[in-house]
Image 1 (cartoon, rainbow, N blue to C red):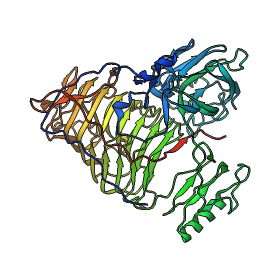
Image 2: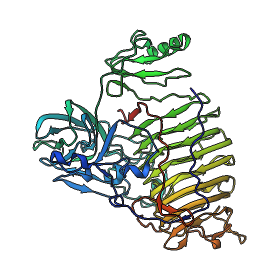
Image 3: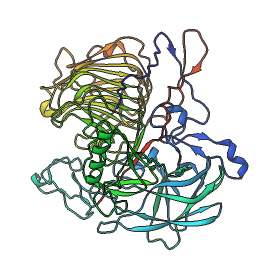
Image 4: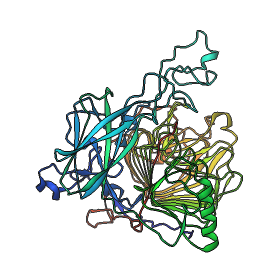
Length: 615
């Protein structure tokens, strides 16, 4: 694959900032209203990206072929739930942290923003009383006719308890010898033993179902989802609907066709060996690998190096399995781009330098939404890697939007790491093992120092549940490891529940043109290594100029905080931030203008990964 590690940087130095809110863009779940479909009789649909107006995330993430509509923005006789980010609740795992809850007989109705012949519904239904899931119907009608019934299932949802989780809602603690937040204790070392409610820590509520509608419908046509009166599901939560005009299957005649090498398109037999043979043949003959329409079972990693794999399209070529990755181990110089990843059970995208350092690889123009555990994009060690122009939204627990980690025994960070022009939305999750909130981007030195040249440029951190930027170590190693040589430039922070920066480690970072607004606490929460020496915190901040804005406590990077004033509040109160809105600014004495759109990714068909855990 070609190497591509440069990204556009919008230089904003030498200007004073001024912000304003644009009409119709300020609310949670706000989007672009498609007024051209009103003539068809339905309400104007609100199209969003990551539950935001698309203009707020322009140029970031994958270029997809479907239109996203949040259920909370459309007519319903059900109940809107949320917004709520409380762990183990249905709204907290929903896109935009809101959804619609239906009981039998209730409906939610979407107006198509453009021509479509297919839909994808993200939903949740209850688990069986003893686990294992249930199935339930959901009726789909278009313009009051053409009724089809989708078969929903919770067989691949609903996890419980401590890692590595269980499907049994009635199980006792998997690790009673672990400290847990719920009692602030180690249960089997506590007398009297604490009472632990069941089910313990329910999570992973949502799944997705998609449907070809059988014909092409126009913009303005109405798609109604109704829970039948006789449904065995006490409730059905609808999170969102994606609508799409699906074309005919893609065909590649001159290629290494996996069927020729024995792949099974019915999904009954393992096809990993056939894929390996097709890839090896394609590399020798300088061909592409083609995967025709079908369902293929692949239960192990497929190693791809300098070979292009094509399918018939994500509606026609489906690969399922217990352990499937896009292209591990990624060869040096690889580019992973234009992928849409939703509902994963771990990091959405990750580079893990296990034994050998990842070098010169790039994650570029990808979208990751609602990873149910861990991070949207994570980098564990490596050399000269790049994370650019990605969009990450709604991480749910024990992780966040962007993560840089010296952990899991990964090779050290060396050379440089470029993190450029990414956007995180509603990131910064609750870390239940520490009982604190994480940053929209967080750096974690657990088993090594982080001291490579790390440049974070042009990122936007929107609607952060806690802080926007966190640098942290773990208590047992707090005096062993540090984080240094991190540089933030041309950053926007729009809304934090607590601070802009939370430093819980020794080290240093510099800040230039980092603009913040709607900050919920002191701009810098500097705890350092928690030794609190008289000389100040063990973490120092360098102000390179142009750091503007703040919140109720004044400028976020005030002179009195520099270079290392101890401002430590171990668990500060959380203030719900305002919803993101357009960013207006002036250059010198010039007029107020809205920031330019970042250059979009080259148009090509995206890879769609909508994941669920297989039992």
